[in-house]
Image (tube, rainbow, N blue to C red):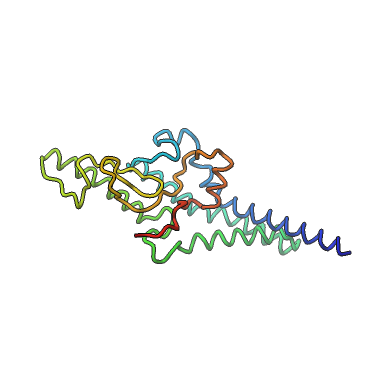
Length: 216
């Protein structure tokens, strides 16, 4: 009798874990697969090399932002089937499916930190700041053409070339940090390989690995 109860408990736990895994993966299908093909990444250097701050990058982040919020709509089918399985079959898998899907919705609606300027991995504030760097690059070109002295408080150097490294955006010419924010997942094919890369994206949910570092 005891062995049967133990087996039932273990099987129930396994079904619950399976439901949680499925409920976690389904909402993240867009951000896992929709930008990973080589044809969509030919304009970017391979992961994890630094990536230039340009309009292609802004377009990619805007696209990832849409996919990030699209995951809420992908959550509803998993949430619905989980509720059906709980209601009609008292299923441990259904409970896991329902719990993981509900948590995804909560994690999307709640910001990462109320004291952080960038509340989400692909925040509009982040896009605005990156666009300012592009505008600084354009302003530098105008100042050089007009032979006007460059104000280094606004533009780091005459050869400003912002690159987004793992930990921050840095000028490749003078090494000045232009934006102290780690790089989130940008939808490139990851160097770890398909399985490890997807696992990392699933765990971090698009957020940078260094997102918990202390801000200066």
